[in-house]
Image 1: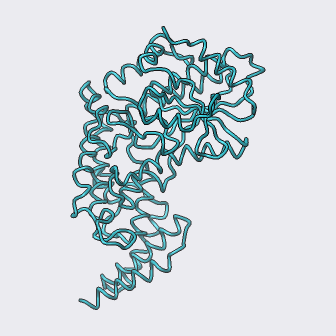
Image 2 (image 1 turned 90 degrees about the horizontal axis):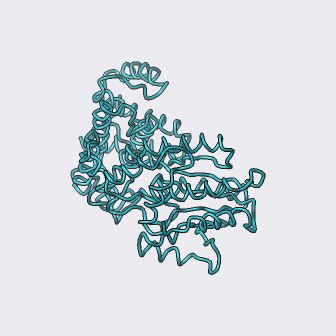
Image 3 (image 1 turned 90 degrees about the vertical axis):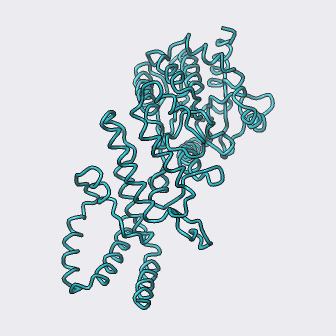
Amino acid sequence: MSLNINFLQSEIIDQYLYDENSTRPWIIGFSGGKDSTMLLQLVWTAIKKIPKELRNREIYVVCNDTLVENPKIVQFIERTLKSVQKEAVAQDMPIQVHQTTPRLEDTFWVNLIGKGYPAPNNLFRWCTERLKISPTTRFILDKVSEKGEAIILLGTRSDESASRSRSMKKHEIHGQRLRKHILPNAFVYAPIKDVITDEVWTYLLQVNPPWGGTNRDLVTLYRNAGGGDCPLVIDVSTPSCGNSRFGCWVCTVVKQDKSMAGLIDTGEDWMEPLVDFRDTLVETRDNPMYRQGVRKNGGEGPGPYNEFARALYLQKLLEAQKAINQVEPEVQLITHQELVAIQITWYRDSLFKFKVSDIYNKVYKSQINMSSHDEKFRREEELLKKSCDGNAQDFELVQELLALQKSKSLMVRKRGLQDDIEKRIQDYLATNKRN
């Protein structure tokens, strides 16, 4: 092997022990791909050479889950992280595993199906900040606040792309291993920045991970998918993904998810519903029949997805999940919390034609309890019908106003409730006046 592993490990040991601020923790960005795997292996084996009493610097292995990652990759990463955490304890290593995820209001489905954000494209790429940058940034800032400073270790390499090489050069501190990060009091350390791709694969094939097993599954994933991995994205200068990569299965920024196509071609045909759903998003994104005619800021369209589109996408997503679960029962495309948040968001947008529970029950032919208050609201509905004395329009209006109030209560944010109620009443009066 032409790569000097001993030199790299010596540098890592030196940086760990003799850094001018020994209290600032190391945060290793781990995506589960080849580069971050090599980085973690190198750091682990280097720190292992240090006497236990000198392993005082905390090391956090941080992996971000966008909640819409390729399910095959999710399964692989979860197995890896469990092994890393287990062996870190067994080997008395100062390593902790942390998974970051988007906040509920920032998840892909709450934004696309709930708020009606159109599927991302290069002009409106709303997903990267919410799903990738913000969750990891919050973790880093927490550690900076706690310790004063932090060092982020990344598996970025100059060999990967010209743009990445320029970005690394731009923030480099001449004559030092660390470069400044866009976040205050945070620095970046890239131990394998000069390693070329062939050397990465040679190392992984020759050196087994110190947390057990081999890198055979990782190599097989790459071979079958024919793609590269998405790096841990911590700022806008980090490329989100290329045309051929492991990443979000629902990504509509790329023309084709070559990695998923490769996996399907090699026998993972249970993933076909994912491709079909993604293609539906691409094909309908700019269809005016699926969009409101007014933007959220009041400007002329095309605006968010309309009520019909949001309900349709939810139904197709649940149908895809149901089909996949017949083969892979552990795969979850959307969480129960997201379903509740979508319903609440529809209420807040004054969309009352469809109910999440009705769509779910239609697909699964079973009952989903969206709230512990459901039975209470059903009883109230019966009383309300009697009070309205058969007037369907009045009944619907009061139902919608109650739904608005309920959504504000569940979101613990009543701000704007009065305006929402007044607007709905004005719309109701205007409609009845025309009729």
